[in-house]
Length: 232
Image 1 (tube, rainbow, N blue to C red):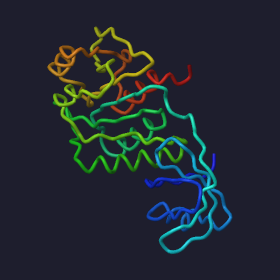
Image 2 (image 1 turned 180 degrees about the vertical axis):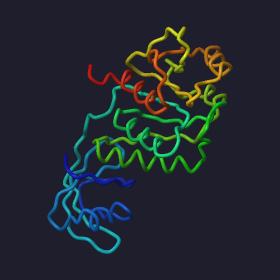
Image 3 (image 1 turned 135 degrees about the horizontal axis):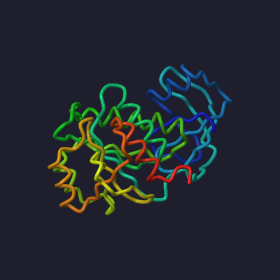
């Protein structure tokens, strides 16, 4: 797969000027020069093969050679809502969910949350999703929501109808299945009983990933693997 660079701009065959951090990365870090070929993408689902014409201090001139539709997305929406793990583990979480094809990520604020996500997390995580998309070949960027409380999240109208809340209670018998759905992952201490009850009252299914207690990011990634059907 060709070296990939992201731009939020509309793209079409013809000359295009790349600016900002991606231009710096292309010219100064990767040191591409006139005649080198790269791929641009902007989140619309297409690859845009291009050839470098030249570069300045803050921009790179390219010729976009064409538009190549790609099929690297899941055929259904997959929403993961999760409390945030500590430190760099949150970046790992975003990277892996992007690679697995998750379409939307919602940072959760729960009763037992240790990390309290702030509005600035949206920009940070979106950038991480873009970087992961550059590496894995995705041409649609995983959407990152503003942080939401558990109560507010349960009231969202624009999420898939099939909804699972992961629960560590050994009596939980629900199992995740492949297909369009939303999966909610609690903090290290799990969802509080009243949160699980509220989800059940709203029609959510309590599901388990097995007898072992996983870290937040492990549980979220494992759930995404099951639902996305990776390896099937």
